[in-house]
Length: 195
Image (tube, rainbow, N blue to C red; front, side, top):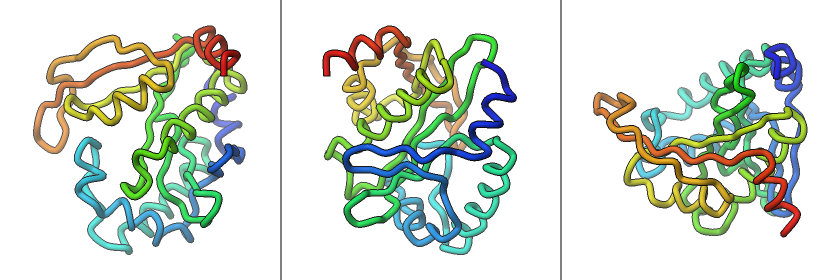
């Protein structure tokens, strides 16, 4: 996998569709929907960022992302609930390891949509894109110790839990233990054929 391929693909990030969701570029006009979940402490408890303090902060953040998209340096899709048309979270790649042909996936959803299988649906579509379009060999996901909901999502995706890295990340002034799960391309393809 080459950096220029990633830049080219994500500078014009394609829309992805599932049964219940539309995954698309995040827009400044999404600011109200984004603020609704990004301002919540229960959403950011196991994330690296603090809750958004006000809608203006969210607007400025989305304006910043617009420049990152244009440069092909932002790899997240906005997750839009198809029936109501609201953006309810994000899902995408947090990083790529070009040398090892792998990527790390991440996601966040508004709590009103937790427990409905939508995180699994969004992640599965992004993983399919990663393996089929980007030609990745491995996709992994990291989660903070104690975030059992996230671990359940990753297990439902067919990922293998590889273990914990003790106090491996400094988050909001506290060293956090980080869990790692992964899936290989052939494992994902095999599981997809069974569905």
